[in-house]
Length: 101
Image (cartoon, rainbow, N blue to C red; front, top):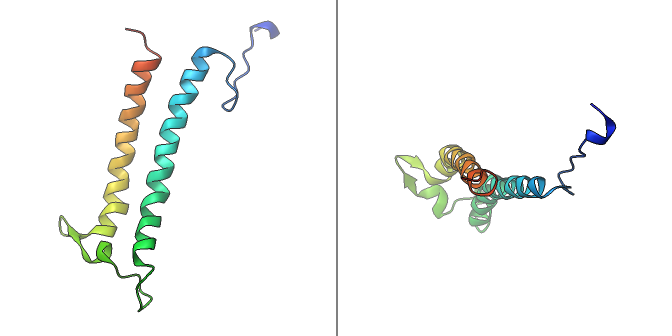
């Protein structure tokens, strides 16, 4: 491969229009993943911050969903389902922006 055929790939400064579309899709999915991974635990922590016993009890820890405590379900199954939905979103965005039909 000749030096003139090389393409510099930089996630933070894409050089071609196609790379800009690809990185915008990746950035969108990474942002949603970040909000899902850190937003839910922070929400649970904030909800229990006012507990006078110091145990973090709140409506989120008291509520039940499908037999599980809501906070457990949000972290364990909710984030897993969210990850699968992010993968689906990635495929949908890829088809819409990159693949021309």
